[in-house]
Amino acid sequence: MFVRKKLKKGLLLHAFNVIFPSVLPCPDPPPNEKEAGWKWYGLEATRYKCPNGLKFVDGSYPYFHSNCTVAKEWEPPEVIDCERKFFFTSD
Image (cartoon, rainbow, N blue to C red; front, side, top):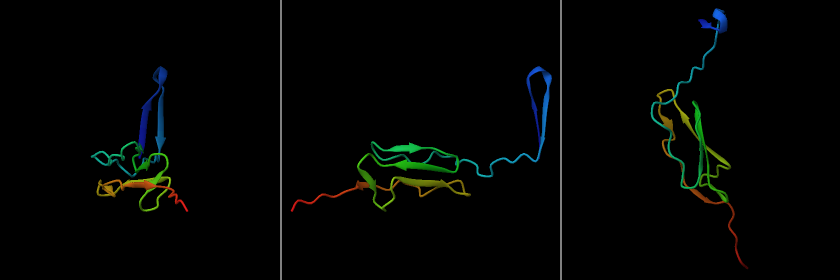
């Protein structure tokens, strides 16, 4: 692949064998985060975090990921629920 970019003062940058990411973003936005949770969007994956004091029900902690597949769909298509990280019992 050949890339040509115009720089300041009319100079040209020529580059060969430029590698571009092979993963393209999904056309639809990633699943929404749970209420009061956090989401960090990326081209290949979106990272989620439960609100403080909670973890994901599948045991994922501190992050859960949804990946953009080759079919350009988010997998898994929904963010799983959060639950309390610690359970206290009174004896």
